[in-house]
Image (tube, rainbow, N blue to C red; front, side, top):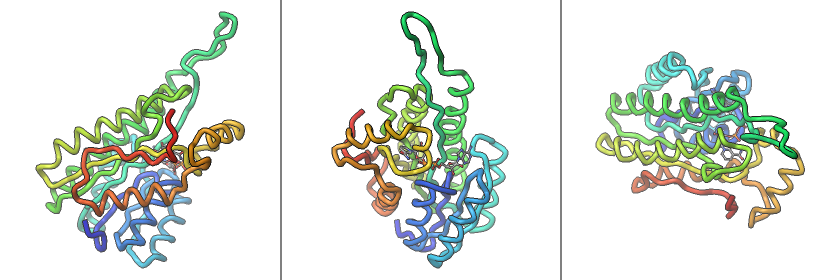
Length: 253
Ligand SMILES: NC(=O)c1ccc[n+]([C@@H]2O[C@H](COP(=O)([O-])OP(=O)(O)OC[C@H]3O[C@@H](n4cnc5c(N)ncnc54)[C@H](O)[C@@H]3O)[C@@H](O)[C@H]2O)c1
């Protein structure tokens, strides 16, 4: 896919991987619709995209809300006149052990609220945006691409029952969409990042981050730009669909 003039919609674009992905597409000449529930930080992303010389617009949206997503995607299509690429990146963590006990005494459990919050954003949000994005791509008639951000945790990471389940679901949805949507000229692929240097790691204790780095064969965290480069590769290589790309410094959980 030639990126100049194409319209890319990036969720969770206010910071971290989403901002890096928005900027990488802007640097290739794509127009950017930057979506997030954090409007203030979103403006910074849009300013940086505009500075790269492309049209960019901020949309404050909660990806868990069906009316929000529909309203926002209608506005994107009206603003830009097309809808070529969706990057489903918005995500959260609410880590906890399933059950924590010592000497037979139960200390804590993952709450239903922790489970549901992560499933709502990381799984249902991806479903809603993917469905609404695919509909608009079909209506626009130019084909398109959906890139889903999964995670290395989809293999099953202790402390992340909720997150691992959601990210495994995202990888599975990607395969389904690649097969269902190919007839409309729409591709779907996913990226499973390893641990990357973003705010999402703020939830981890510093000693845990140190232990993670030591376990990564490359002995460092990933840079957001390295994940963004993978998204651009997927967009530009039109033989890619239905696959999950692992970008993790070689770490196996
Ligand atoms: N950083 C990592 O180590 C890492 C590793 C693997 C996968 N990931 C995934 O990459 C994606 C981006 O992660 P990040 O590290 O940049 O996180 P981040 O916390 O830095 O940014 C996530 C963004 O998503 C937005 N967001 C959260 N809930 C939202 C909602 N309901 N509606 C709209 N926006 C919402 C937040 O406001 C935030 O701006 C996530 O899906 C995450 O699970 C991250």
